[in-house]
Amino acid sequence: MDDSGNGPRHVNKQNEYRATGNRRNGWLVDRNRQRSENFTGIDGINAQDRAVQESMGEIVDRSREHLGPADRAIIAARRLLSEAVRGKQKGETPRGANMKYTGIRASEKVFSKDIPWRDVLLPEMYPEGEKVPAIAFIS
Image (cartoon, rainbow, N blue to C red):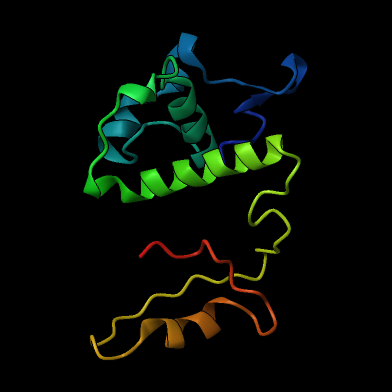
């Protein structure tokens, strides 16, 4: 099995590299595999991603949505995207567009409440000399 979901069984080169699994064939879900091996029944993470994206349906009108405190990350992401669009329309470079993120490393630890976590984790997450993005934290 190809774990990526981008192998020759998943992408049709003769058809402009379109995915073999699609809405018409149920994304090639294997129900036996779904019961015993893999929650989705779809071979490969990329094939699973394509299935989820394609099956989402029409774009929803988010202007009628009522977001609450548990949706802070969604609210912050939408504000940043809106800010970037407005800035780009004015000819500005969006925040973070010129930053280099390739050196960022994930880090996770459990601290007691009296230890300032940023002082400990930031040096692990960002290589020396790299500028820490201002939008990296949602407090």
